[in-house]
Length: 169
Ligand code: FES
Image (cartoon, rainbow, N blue to C red; front, side, top):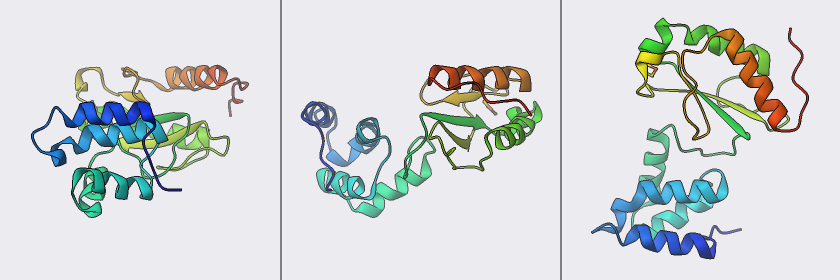
């Protein structure tokens, strides 16, 4: 089915457009709006955005693939975005990543079969002083993370989704 904005988001899109002298300059907020509505930026939405902003689909695609905050396929309810840049790496992000892979049984850009967790690494989140840092969806960062705290966090997230905490291995 072709992508369309909801009536509410169409109004929001027009408000966004009014802030820019050229339609093409509204690409990033338009992508955010599409992702907020649909959960990710599907192929139909790429064509839709290109037409609305008077640019080529490949230009939309190039921006989506440059920024890690945009998703080209559905993500889980909790999108775990672990910073793997230098400060976080020096302070243990690789151990955290290995633990997440093992505990969740998924690789990067994969989603657990229950649809709860998607795992990604991202570039510097701008909070190097509190490394290692994890962002979940668009929520405030989880900082100074260790393995124990990460396990607690995963249990809390599962519980908040109505599932029993996963058994520890
Ligand atoms: S390196 Fe991770 S927040 Fe900067």
